[in-house]
Length: 246
Ligand code: SAH
Image 1 (tube, rainbow, N blue to C red):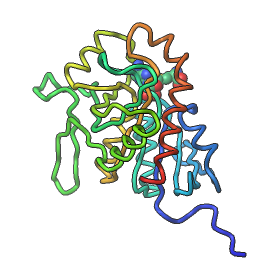
Image 2 (cartoon, rainbow, N blue to C red; image 1 turned 45 degrees about the vertical axis):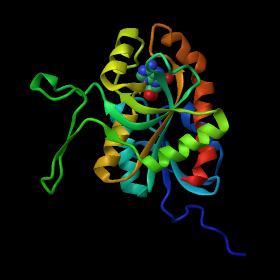
Image 3 (cartoon, rainbow, N blue to C red; image 1 turned 60 degrees about the horizontal axis):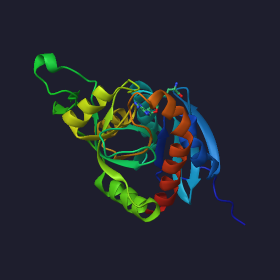
């Protein structure tokens, strides 16, 4: 009998979560896993629901997320990178336990407004000289549609819109209102916009899927530890159900 190689050669889907709780159910559900270390991070390569995948825990924040995404991109050439996990809800319509799929991400703390640039504009350099200023970092429409469709059939739906990313755990109703007004955001977290920028620069499609662990308000310091596990499981379950269609 021919033995299948453990590390499959087909281009994988990359999956990044900031915290262990956001990726552990996915890693546990993988088959034929081999673990490789790069940039000090562990990359779990194998199949999930029969789909070649590489899964990593990047650590919280934009720099960790960018290092992980860029390393994944150079080393594994993923055909899509998906950022999964938990986030703070923004606005009055998004509640703990809800799912959010990003249409686009914005690095809301990238601030050169003093020079007249809109808040959240990032400056992309290209060897060709074809530089670009981008505020809304796009996410893959097809992947988002698959995640939304699966969320509809399993959980009755998900919010779809802007996800705000910055290096702050937001626990402030005023900041929440600001993110709602400035970006019509649905969620705030600390990695999606960094991964979306790496993917945009590397011309690899990306998706951001988050379950709400807290509402980015005064209650967040209590709600985050209370609801993160359940929310993280929800986002991994949805991704597991959708991955065969991505
Ligand atoms: N010491 C903590 C740090 C977690 S930071 C730990 O590692 O356990 C919060 C994480 O959850 C980030 O990865 C972020 O993406 C997400 N998150 C959840 N709620 C958030 C909020 N209200 N504001 C910003 N990020 C939030």
